[in-house]
Length: 233
Image 1: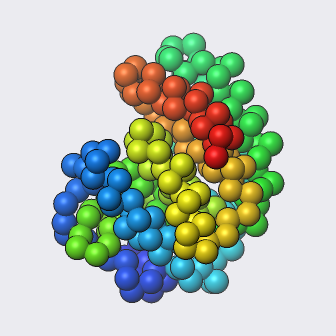
Image 2: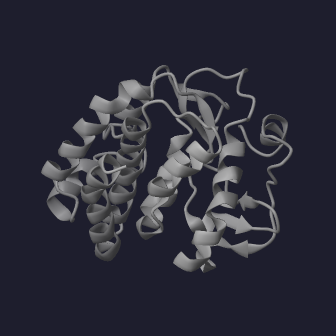
């Protein structure tokens, strides 16, 4: 399984698997205004991982192989409710939780419509970059918990951070940061929305499954407001 030694082999040496420092959950808006270039630079380092020996998309299987042949298949299968795992028959949540069928289908369909913009974007992603999974060191940001490491569009890690802290205005900061640093991101708006809907619907499903209504309300609001935010950039 792709963990530990394999990660050490393919990740840039600048990324530490066991970083020690201040946890990202401890920072607030004022802190992030100063720290976001450090966060962005460190997240972008992940995409430099050498994944040439791997094909496909999605999280790594127990055999250390991304499971899906195309990006679109990865998205569709991620929300399958017939697999014999935790998410078997998960769509029953439409009748028992705040996760409603109409809301899910609206943003699932938007995600699929946008999927072609991400189809050829294959990079290693942490895939769990909530702020509690980050560590602030002197000159970089480290990342904890690589258990959901995957291959997909690298924008996923930024979209995950934004879902956690939308009031940090991460995509709003990304556009000028990329421009200032000469980083070209084709189809940025479409790719960010696609990845954000993927992560948002996944997070909503999880919190609905544990009856966390407060988090569900926050995630629903974040997903609903995102398109206007991105289109204003």
